[in-house]
Amino acid sequence: MLGPVLLAASRSDRMRRLVAAAPVTRPVVDRFVAGDELAPALDSVRALTDSGREVTLDHLGEDVTDKATATATRDAYLRLLDALGTEGLAGKAEVSVKLSAFGQALSSGGHDIALENVRQVAEAATAAGTTVTLDMEDHTTVDSTLAILDELRQDHPGTGAVVQSYLFRTEDDCRRLATPGSRVRLVKGAYKEPASVAHQDKREVDKAYVRCLGILMAGAGYPMIGSHDPRMIAIGQHLAREHGRQAGDYEFQMLFGIRVAEQRRLAEAGERMRIYVPYGADWYGYFMRRLAERPANLAFFLRSFVPG
Ligand code: FDA
Image 1 (cartoon, rainbow, N blue to C red):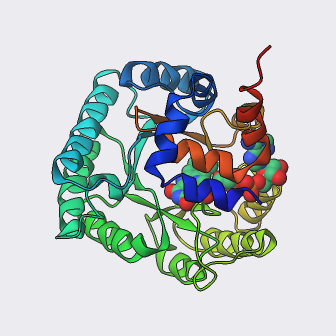
Image 2: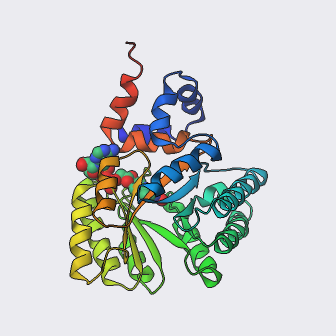
């Protein structure tokens, strides 16, 4: 029940200041975020890849409202890709981007500004031997994000996208995206969406997830199962077998710090397992979405306020 309240708070500047100022916040943030800077994030990448997991890195940030910050986001990703290349990590690590951090939400020319910024990141990723995946944000951004995906894939066919099963439109998007070479991460969806565009009942979101997974597994693309849900993982494995896919013809993805034992178990069982590693100082929106999606995460945060 608190989920919608927390999701609304994730976009409030006042709450951002309050949460960031609380001294107990940091240790809880550290459970979900691999540090404010690139160096500790790269340490986490090395630890994950040494244990047989792969990585997608997210330089945290979203909803930028000026061009200079959008350019700074692009530059942070260029530094990240340079480091992945130099450190020999590009074979096991790719990057995830939020287009709102690249200027997509700017009132004048946001779509084109985001496209130009992310195109340079895609070029750097291709040069380093890795790929970019476009995270999906709230429903108002989906058309623009999928149009940018189509543009990028002309020169960088490995560019991936995320689709959210809570949106009514997503089964159609899956059908359109399930084509050769297409990388698609299926998630349930993490934003507060109105009933006019999205399922509100968790059971309906789960059923839609299974239908979308069926479409992606039956298609010719590369499905990326982004979920911590044991049922979705089991169904993913079942559908993969049914459609003759071997491990590596699809992959599982989970978030940094969440269900770590299960991440290891799947990797040790021979599944391709990729971890989404967020880093950077702008962790507030990401952190609040993690609290919103699971009461246990929120309880962990609230318990840290209790002394002793
Ligand atoms: P859900 O929250 O529905 O929980 C179902 C079950 O999973 C639980 O009952 C429990 O059994 C298990 N579980 C879940 N979390 C657990 C935990 N912390 N510990 C133990 N068990 C747990 N969203 C978005 O809108 N756009 C995006 O681009 C992305 N990107 C993205 C990348 C990756 C790699 C992942 C894994 C997720 C995203 N998401 C996302 C977030 C996604 O939309 C969703 O909010 C979360 O993954 C939560 O949904 P789940 O399917 O994991 O399980």
